[in-house]
Length: 243
Image 1: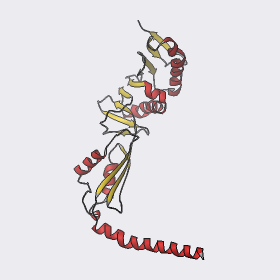
Image 2: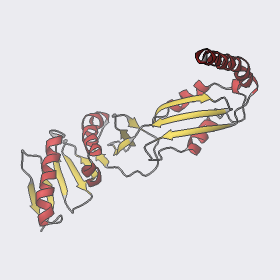
Image 3: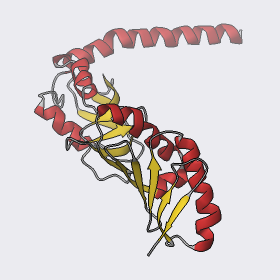
Image 4: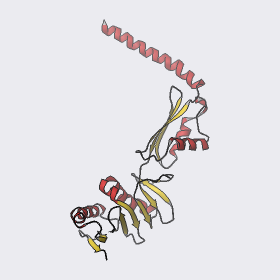
């Protein structure tokens, strides 16, 4: 008996929802207007782009749906425009039953800022994509020097990725300079020395060697004893003492 009643209840709920979907929802779409735009930005708390900035961009393109009839604008047009912004990884736009246009945005997360040889400034994200349009000051390492698109992909990216994935190096490395002869020099945040890194080869082992020297050497003798640490040759750390 109980199972039969439960079955009837389930059928009744399904029928009611079907009637709602057939009558209420189409009616809303035909006569309803966009009450407001709700923007959710996932940018790893970096605040790369704000709701106000997104709304300003939509207004400039004539794509602000606020106050417009639901059937008077196309969510795909808004979605495609936002997707075209290089700092946006993915965007989804849809209308809710209550009359809100929902915009969910996933941003590309930058891991390094680059100033290339032609004077261009941009960021590189964790997947190696070049990202333009980030104007906020972010706490990231800076790469500069003789960098073109090829070097940005083949040399800057692997170094930046290793630094970003390691808590110590993410806090320690401040600047990376790429010389004309592919010689890399780094400036740390702690310690009055520079790091002669050499070419972008054997990257992981070089950082591991330097970390061991920091831990077993610099922590004992002091971080300001040397002006230069060279880690480009074998397993050696060649130190240049300050004058």
